[in-house]
Length: 184
Image (cartoon, rainbow, N blue to C red; front, top):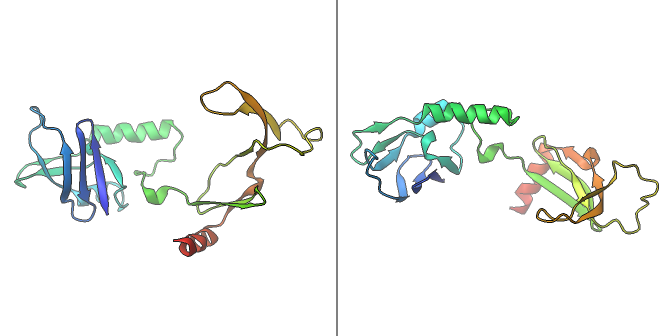
């Protein structure tokens, strides 16, 4: 798999198994000690309990050798510590990596334009907002079902919408993976 290491000076695409550079789009820098030749996959996996490297990674989060293979630059342990603190403060249950395998697969099942079910292979917090409230029985609904909410992110216009809560969500990893296998 190709991985993109990102830095303020550009990106480097490398092979996630070997650490070998595929494309280097880093702008030259006078203060930089050397040009990167290969990334340290083993150190990264050891740091993150064997988790695979995500598709995008900060250059500070992975060690590397220069082109000659003689000079090694450690990953920024301070950066890693700050990343962990930031994730904890934001309420993320920190497992020392965020990668694509940590992202839940979500399947939304519609029938007749109505959300019938939302399936996921991992726990998620979900709200479905339905702006089409015509014909709904809003006089019998409680205030938690119909609300005035913004129509778009960049406007102050509000509209009445029906809010589906957790009643349509189902945690069902086996079924989600069966569906994903069928549609891929």
